[in-house]
Length: 610
Image (cartoon, rainbow, N blue to C red; front, side, top):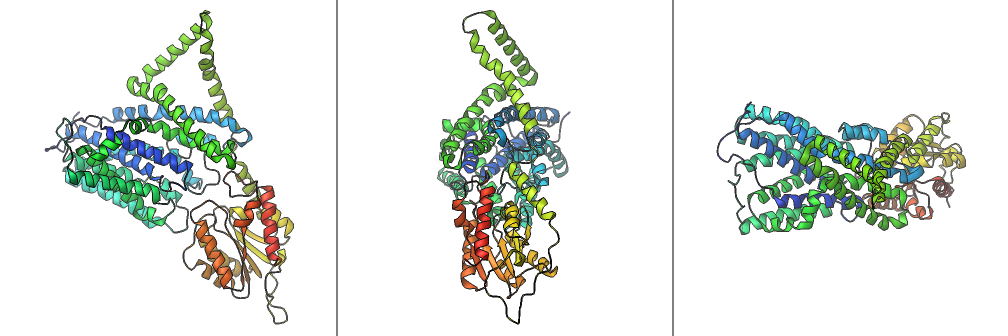
C-alpha cells in the first residue's frame, strides 16, 4: 500500500554511503571512551552521545522520508526488523560476554546485574536508572551497564518516530511545515531540560530522560527534512568552495572545542549548551552530505572510518570494561587499567563486528543462526575425527560452554546492593534506630555564651551526605549523644532549609557540623543563609570535601574563606586529612572502616578545639 508523499522537487534518492559520516561516528565514540577513561582531560567527551543522537535522527528520518516521498509506505515491520538486526545481536553478545567477565571481580562482582539485564532487554535502562535514583555524573559505584541508557532512548525513538512522522506528513503535507514542526519539538525538548535544571542538584534525571534528552534525535530529524529540499541529484558530490570549507571547519572546530572544554555538570550544558552542540553537529552533517570539504577529507581517514563502522561495539564494550578495571586495578595502577581497557575494548568490538554484527546484518537472524550451528557441528566433528590440528577446536568449543556458565553464575551471584550500598544502608538503619535525641542544653549559662568549640557529642548537631553517613557507626561510638542527620545524595544547597527544620523542631545544638558538598556546588549566599539559620550564638564547623569532581575546589575555597572571616565558623580539613586514608570505596570518596576512624578522629580533634 502506498504511503503519503510530500512530492515536489528534491525528492530524496538512495544515496551512496558517505564515508565522512562514518568518520564522524568514530569521533563520537572516541570522545565518549576518552571521557569515561580520563574525564579531567576531556570534560566534554560526554557530548559524543549527543553526536550519535543527531546522526541517528538524521539517518533514520532521511531513510523514512525517502520512502514516503517515493510514494511508498514506511514499512514498519521491515524497519523494526532492520533495527533489531543492527542493535540486538551485538548487545546480547556484549551482555553475555561482559557478564561472564564480571566473574573476575570475585567478591566485588557488580551489583544489580539481573535488574540491569531486564532494563537492557526491554530498552528501559534510562527509566530504570531514573527510578532507582542512579546518578550518571556522581555515582559512587555506577551500574555495570549504565551506558545502555542512551540505547534505550534511541530504541524508544525508533519505536515511536516512524508512526509520528507518518501522522505529521499526513497532517502537515508540506516539507516546510514538517520541518518547522519537528524543529519546534526539538526546541521544546531542550527548553524542558533548561527550565527543569536546578543549580547544585543532580541533573541525571534530565540527562537520562527520553523527552528531556531527546532533542538531539529531533535536531537530526529536522536536519534530514531540511536536507531533502536540496538533496543532490546523484553522482559524486561537488567540491565545496571557500565559504563551504570555512563554515564546515568552523562548526566542526566548535564541536571539538565543546568536547574539550564543556564540563558535564556545568549549568550552561543543560541550559542550551548540549542543544547548541546538536545544532552544530546537524550543520556539519548537512554540509558533509552536500559537498566535499576539507573536513570531509579529514573525517574520511581510514582509522576514523574503521572506528565509525565499529562504533556500536566500541560503545557497548568500553563501559563495563571501565567498571571492571576499577575493581581489578588499584588507584596507583589506574593508567595501566585504562590501557588494558582500551586494548580489550577494541578487540571485543572487532570480534563483535566479524562474529555477530556483520553476519546478522548481511544474512538475517535465521541464516546466521543456522551458520553458527553448522560451524559448531563441524568443529565437533573435527575434534572427534583424529585429524592433525583437531585440538585447536577445544578452545572455541570450551568457550561456548564456559562463557554462558560464567554468565549465569555472575547473574546469580550478583548482590542486590554493592558493598558500599550495604555499608550506607546499615548506617542509615543505625541512625533510624537511634532513640529520639534529648532537647539541647540552653545556649547561655549565667548570662554568657560559651566561646569556641570545645564540644562533646551531646552538644553537636551534624548534617552531612553519604561521606558522613559512611562514618556514622564510628561517630556514634566516639561521640556518644551526637545528633546526626545524613543521607545519600544530600546537597549543600539544601543546608539552610535542613537547619531551619532542625531549629524549628528544637534539635539544633550549640555546635553545628556541616559535612556537605560531595554532590554539588552551592548557589551564592548559601553559607550566609546557613549562618542565619543557626543564629549568632552557635558555632559552625565546616568539613572540606574530598572528591575528584569539578566543583569541590570551589566549595572548599568558599569554606576556607568563611572560616577565616567569621569568628564562630571553623574548619575541619577532610580534603587534607583524607591523604592518610587508604581504604576508600572504589569511587575514592567514601571511607571504609579505617577511613571512618580517621574522619571521626578529625572531627573529634576539631570539636575539642585542637
